[in-house]
Image (tube, rainbow, N blue to C red; front, side, top):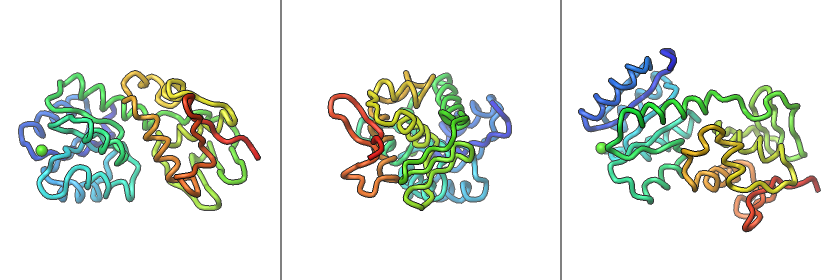
Amino acid sequence: MNSNTSVLVVEDEPEILELISTLLRLENLDVMTASSGEEGLRAFFQRRPDLAILDIGLPGMSGIDLCGRIREVSEMPVIFLSAFGDEADRVKGLRMGADDYMVKPFGADELKARVAAVLRRAAMPAVGEDRSDFTDGEVLIDHGAHTVVVRGEPVSLTPLEYRMLSVLSGHRGQVLSQDRLLDLVWGADAMEAAPESVRLCVSHLRSKIEANPRRPKLVETVRGFGYRYAAAA
Ligand code: CA
């Protein structure tokens, strides 16, 4: 991995913090550490890392709260660590906009694979980058600049949300199944993506582009089949 890539690791258990830092430094990453959410937030604002690995169970500000603060200003990739690994925690983490999730204890290979996958995804050129701009009167996607404007307002999307929107709008009027979306949006990482990832990504996307996310008009659910970007009226 590239040594210009910096990773923020926030974990209150010193042995685990040390272990993760050592493993990531062996991968040539520039590692900064913090042992509380507050310290992690300061480090984030000072150094603007490329990736954050956040323990959920921290004293004071939790990893989930920290992720929420980071998400107010940044779409950088976030991986959560949890001691529990129960489904509720995992879903809460993904709902907060985390890109991935690891349950402690995890092995060195798993850590390396997940970090590499998240960084690869963040660097992946968006689907159809060479395409001309997309517009349907409500949504304008500038594929060269990677910017999205909805009803005249610029919208900030994570790399995954951007890929999801690009894929859906690129297949306008066509129904895409969850499996097809996993393949098209997650690409080589489709196998590792959690089954609820498509639904959560669509739901995040709707909250950012739909006038009323509860009654989506742009990204429609086709019950039993998948999702469809609305055809022109
Ligand atoms: Ca902890």
